[in-house]
Length: 253
Figure 1 (cartoon, rainbow, N blue to C red):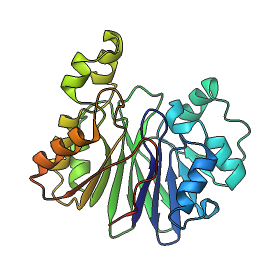
Figure 2: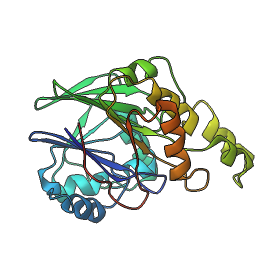
Figure 3: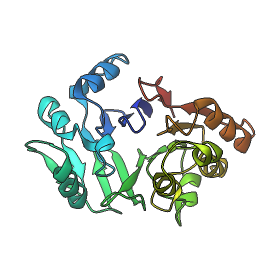
Figure 4: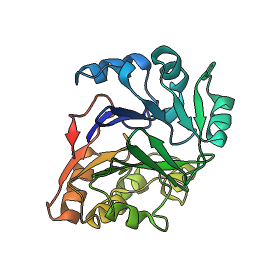
């Protein structure tokens, strides 16, 4: 199984996961041109992608879903609530191939099973994804809200994880954001801190690697997030950081 972050952050999110001939994109928060070029850097034709999976309705995860579907003929898997909410503030355009699911469903896409995990993030009907091919399991776990019941068990079942590590607690506390925004980020419908993410990754006894995603530009630094996770895992697994501006190396399970 191969995993690439094409970009991750409040400026846009998109991940690639492949097992055999099943090739998935998770979220469409970057332009079609960016996605096409960044996949091509790894020798991958975006037109070979099997499906686009959408986590939730926020712009940095769904804004280009219509472009991905129309320009590259990629079917979109999304909950009805997520799509209806996104269409109120994003101009997604005409969508010809939308396949709805309910949060909590398992999607069968070729030989791959995609388990959808409901999240308490402040989207309309957000989900995280656990993707398995019968031998390996990878989680795409961003915009989680808080460490909800069952999340630790999900981590313990994974061979690798893309997980949000949004903010450093002290940087957020002393930073320039308005107090209301600080409370939203650190609240039960916001994002995970470096410490919360690291504690989860440290509990993942099967994990080969973790890719830290959705880092705040204002309230975090890649070196801080990475060091926090290395300390929590005693250096036993590889810790990578997803860029806000470019594709990651291809990671393998």
